[in-house]
Image (cartoon, rainbow, N blue to C red; front, side, top):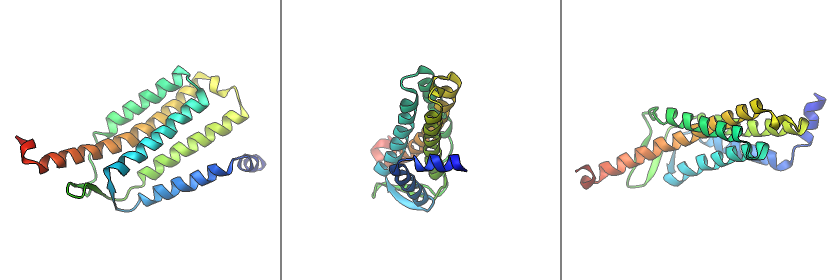
Length: 175
């Protein structure tokens, strides 16, 4: 318990603010909502950026971590983008907005990225040589990459829906 207290007391305050912000953003997505294409795109970009930053900040330009990240991101993207959208998801061409059911997945992904970054930070602070271990770098790269790929695939599925609906709304596009 004393070690946990030490870890928490040495955590910068901004980390707790970021955690609260991510929880709030994730909780909002648990309820049905309407979102613009921009908003649907920005969250995956931000979280992918945070994920990539996690790799670079812990491992620098270590090829094994970067390859693990890219490989897992690609595999998750290719897999998840094939899954069907929820039946109630739709795109309003006139309003250029998505109407989406609530989901706990964004919250889970955000917490996954956050806690991975936090845990890696604590472990590296306690064991500075840890980033030099190939297995650790690869494992963390794969984990971050999987989170990024799922986030990106969820946005890609919505982009495909918007494109499909836009084309359906224009008779010339069907010819």
